[in-house]
Image (cartoon, rainbow, N blue to C red; front, side):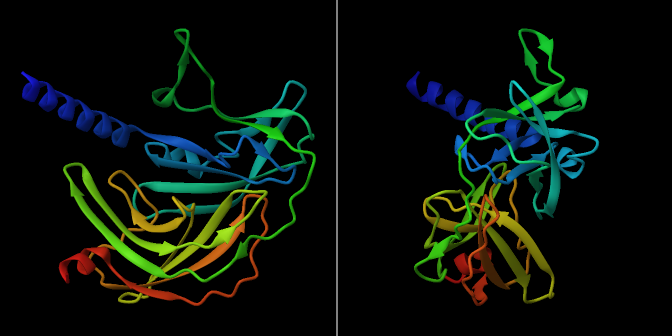
Length: 256
């Protein structure tokens, strides 16, 4: 009986992962609850929500809303990932007021992506809530060392693969969240891709998970990557970082 329960639990967890992968989601950054007055914002969408990200700011209005005002956000940069993932960086049309709490909203989502509250369809999607600090962050991220290749991950699952090249991260920023503009060049084809990634557990993961991701290495073998460190207030590090060459994690694992 215990084995049967474990089997059903495993199947339920797999089905839950499949369901989320199939539908996707919108995720907003920064994930800090308190942000500077000059903070930028990022929205990522994967799977079904990729089409939403492409048209944020026009077909799908995006804005900060407090009890007193509504501040539209405008797209300043758009990045398309290689594995069912897209993102935009957004800037408020005017500075939000210090000491005020704002909610980040997206309007006019299509009916098949609706959210409901008390049985009623909502016309907008509430993402994150932010308290605006009485300061503007102008400090650039600092680095105590350059990123170095650490290891590769290649894990095969029934619903997809985790494929990552992992690099060290020494960037620090006391006031804002760190976003890393990551430029990957396929040394076999010459193709170049850019995407902003966020450090995870003090490391930089370049690749994709089983549902989505910024970079898909395909069957190519050799790549290079350049990291440019920015914070969520738009301050860019002065560090001059040379490209780091790495091997497709699939081949890296096969060679062991």
